[in-house]
Amino acid sequence: MSSTPRACYIVDCATAPWKRASSEGIHYECQLLLDGEDGGPEALRFRFDDCPSVYAHMHLTAQFQLLLAGAMDFPRGVKHLEALAIHYTDHNMPYGPFAVSNKHDMLVLHPKAGGIISMAYHDARRQINLNGRLYAALAADAEWKPLPNVEGAEYKFLMPPSIGPAAVVCKAPAHAALGMPAPAFGRYEVVLKGSVITGGKEIGPPGFRYVRNDNIVQPLLTGEHGATVAFLTFDKDSLEGGIESGNLAREAAEAMARAI
Image (cartoon, rainbow, N blue to C red; front, top):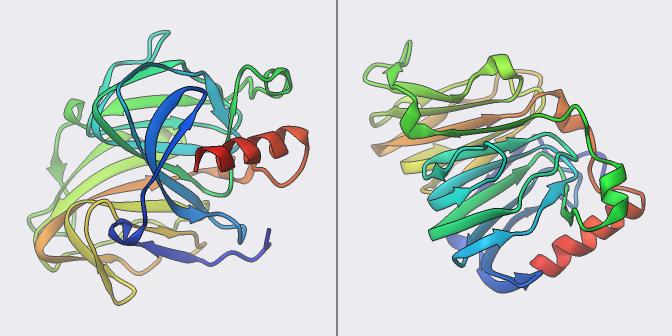
């Protein structure tokens, strides 16, 4: 993999092909949106068939899962999730099995190539991140608040910055500039409704921009009908893990290859 990924990636999901696939008996459709081969981010979109038990696994890098439609049910006290919702894990943080239903549709968003690996692998169990964080939240549980300095705009936190990684949803009228702090460890900016203009392109749901920069980047500009956007920001855990080397890494890469 290249050690010099780009500082900005813009993805229009409408142009990415779908592939029907299965893994460990689980059936789904998938879009490969970013492959991480240049050392940059890896992003996929999954639509699982209704399933009572998606096998326990972990991702080898930090990840946001953004639930766009349907529902997910996790064991051991993690709440029932219905769209719109997020699920975050640090690198090598196992979870599951979990159930999916009701026309499930989600984005899986990594800061770099992370792959997935089943917890049935003994090597995986030996490399669990014992200090790893797991967080889940429903957008419906948070209240809208006025967004400072943007007239007519509102925001809600799904994951407050005090945790480390953060998730905030903003909605704004037409031609508004939506800016955020510098994305030093990487940030996905996902269009949920309406459209945004960035890099000379207009993208609609669930297209996104990924940025990583030590400085503040150009704000997103909302389109003619305004936009609702999820800003998903990584912290320093995004520097950990990945699939560059090692037996566990190779197995994770192979698992991801089978999946897509």
